[in-house]
Image: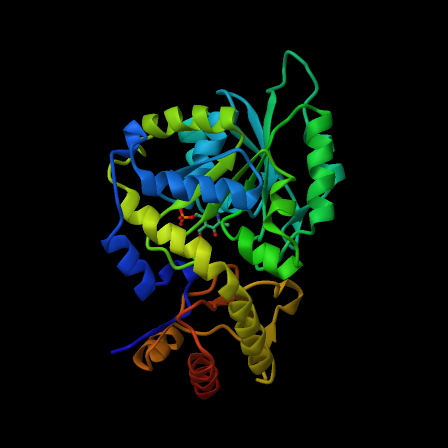
Length: 338
Ligand SMILES: Cc1ncc(COP(=O)(O)O)c(C=O)c1O
């Protein structure tokens, strides 16, 4: 049975072009820095974000945690949003891998207040940890984007205090399309950026960590320490190159599809679409009454996969393999269930 999968954009399958390029990729041992396809992907990634260097990593979580490990020392404090991916969905890795403490700022649609961040930056005091890093997420996994102006204010503050900024840009290209800016403008507000090849861009595996030459050369060694030094990984990098060259331009279609889905759902009684954070390819909704597990299984029987609710909200994600027909099917199935 063919399923339409709205659970996430991480479910995307590689395109035919990716599969063809993977099959004929020229590879080498990337720990020896001998893989030309990985080198090409790294240099294209750095250029795309206007930074000096980049490093292929196995996943977005790996890239974020590698950035934290490279920027900080044990006992440092990291300032970040209370609902960001690093806090909510990375298994507490920052405490385990880097031995850092996470200082969480309240967010509003994924944005942290500059004033709140400033209050949390530590002065020099024998009792205090050092503020080692500020992390920002854009696009935010709540579905909203953060403006470049706001990111710039955070970066200015961080620079004033000599604190580096890491951007969890898993969906930086979605953010750039939604904000109608070049990805370099967003990247210019951070010292390091992680972005994912494997979500809306459809590559099967991999993320990139991008930054200065010095930062990336330190991160390369830390990647080895974390067990992420891969050998003939050019096969995956080949798909990553196609992701950058072909797939970024498709993202606005996913955003339009999300808006189309939101519009259709908002016509249904008993559904509230959270359209104040409908910037990218994610639609969040609340139902006026709690739905039981039959909701998900009934949709499944109709060839539709969705996740269960988180904090009372259901999330539907559009991506390359979701077309209008799939959206109409989902809307019809929800209407029927209700
Ligand atoms: C904002 C954000 N950051 C990081 C990640 C982690 O990526 P991965 O699943 O490749 O570890 C995700 C994954 O969904 C994400 O949404």
